[in-house]
Image (tube, rainbow, N blue to C red; front, side, top):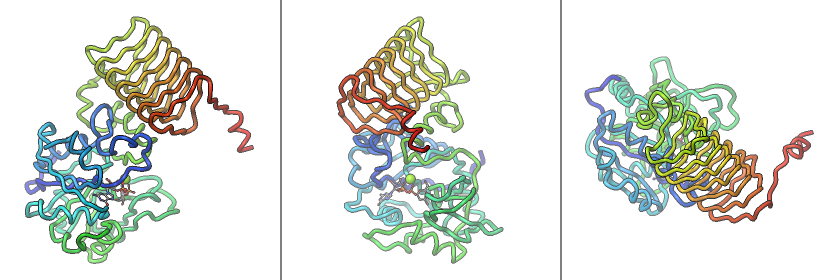
Length: 386
Ligand code: GDD
Ligand code: MG
């Protein structure tokens, strides 16, 4: 890791979006503090900032500010100073940055989209910014399908030739805006105050045509946790240590964290990579993992199987139930023999015994489903396509 001399010491974290695509995971808890391997998601962003010497972070948030503040507080637990700027109406990504003007110190600053999991080398990003001398430098990553991102084309000298937000039907691998920037304070002068304004549509294209925007391509890990699929995949990537996070230290070389007070029955199997939280109980003959996270006080009944799945705190999985490729939000429960395959259960759902939920189904918080009331037959799905 290279350490730039003049790395920005401050950052703006954009957390004002509603996170609707991540419901029902975010129905009760805002996306930025939704637990990811039992840590509020933005903790991973704060870790990366402190690792590169950033001392202050400003959360630019909307209506959910209090819920975020309740979890992150003054930032002391994360090793930096956190403050909050709250907008009454959504101001868009640029408006939200400009709204932090009064609390930013002089000099350049980092900006983070609040839903990006990455171990990007911020010192190298800042060093590129200094070397190129532009008004802004964007962290770029290559993806196979750039259609739902900001598509970036570079010139030979590393300057941005074009920035096209959400290009729609674009084919093939391309560099995209990874949602992490270094900006000079002069950029704030390009942003109208107190009205909706997008940095991707209103600022970057303008800086690009002025030759004053640069790209920094980092081959490190990157993912936007905007959908249930990517939320689940982020857990797998943290567990298998594809991204460098604080959880790696807990998992160690065995890729296994087993809280000292978890109770695992003698005939149960825990297969790494796995994270088993505080006070978890796993019954006789059950199998947990690979790629499973059990939050604090979760219970896995006798003979149940939990694999490639996330069960947040206080989830109860009945005996002989099978959970695969699914997310159970805090306090959800499923009865004996119930099967989940690609399902998302919202907070406090009570799903009775003998059900089968699959195929990307999302169940909203507190839903109650009696025993034996929903089945899912692969054959019928197959027939649809025939
Ligand atoms: N304060 C505030 N106010 N924050 C906002 C607002 C707002 O009005 N609108 C969005 N945000 C925050 C969101 O909470 C999120 O953290 C970040 O800004 C980006 O918004 P998203 O809604 O997640 O945008 P996206 O994922 O469709 O696209 C953005 O991210 C991609 C990378 O993940 C763009 O920056 C793309 O260019 C980029 O490729
Ligand atoms: Mg996003």
